[in-house]
Length: 463
Image (cartoon, rainbow, N blue to C red; front, side, top):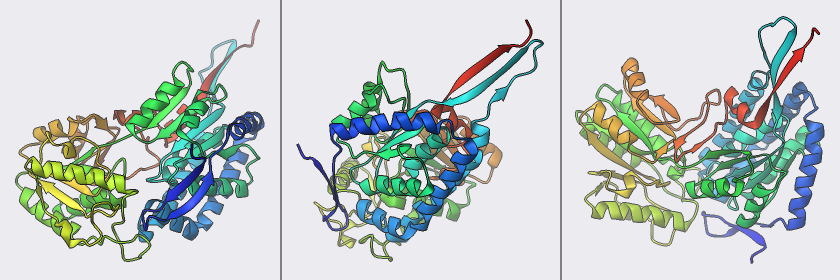
């Protein structure tokens, strides 16, 4: 079996980076080191943990240009937008640092004669973070930073497509002054990842990835009675009401659908538009998409890069072709894009109309630069269609009637609800999903609950 990671860049199909997989001795050593380091780290004051993590983020941000270039080459995001992920990491990290005192504070109960009572939050131990390639730093930092702030040690396993991301985070936390062993990374094969999950020294697993991957994590952790946080797939909908600001709705929803070549768990993959504005919305959406420039992501003029690999692009092509065979109408001519050809990760954007829920493109996660737009005749029909999904990560409504929008949001089966925006994580809010989008919670003060355990103190002071 191959003992080396070879990261193939979608830019030109070249080998961008190679790394050896961790061996069994490496894994055992990392686990032993994490246990020993955590015993000391948990006794470090929260103020000092916050200071060290702040220094680590400062070090990370200082290398934004190098990191952005590596993101571009590892997974294909256009260089003009790759640096935005570093800004997002900084926002989330500094927010979670600011929220740590509140999220980790003890709960002091009302006085009871003769007793003192409180509940404090204690670290769970070792947190194993499994991160994906599509937003390689944002997805990792959601769990890594609060886990460290809570007094846990962390082992990070990153995608084989983005191994340098684990190394850059390690460099940042080392530069920040974290004690040795508190944060480590391992380049792991799938079977070794399962082995680590099953190890009795692991106390919590935070996984971001596919539904199939999430099922593997749950199965591997079964019977261990540990926490498992799963951020899985999405088929996120948007609804454009007749009173929406049309130009804003088009610009926001299209950006939510096509940014990162559609490779976002919370990207917009299906849009429902009220019949009274449907034709105008579609016309403006087509014009918007035609402004995208498909090209090499290391070209500063490129706004739409390749998918992460050819097989991913072929999967999207298959969905599009199948939908058209079933009656959908494609509005973007792929022949206008020289780079779009079979056997290539470069894929032209596509808008499909005359779609319905008998088509996979409206029900199965696509993870590519295509969106289906379906006409509806009422709020009720839109809500029914939006909820007709195995996923429930985010959902958006575009309307000028905020009260009505909130009323509709109360009916939607989703982890995050937006009005007049989409495809965004506010780190002050809980990031969570329902149905096959996973379970657990990251970010916000609630994110600390899943990385700690409550410990109750019941002290009788008078005998």
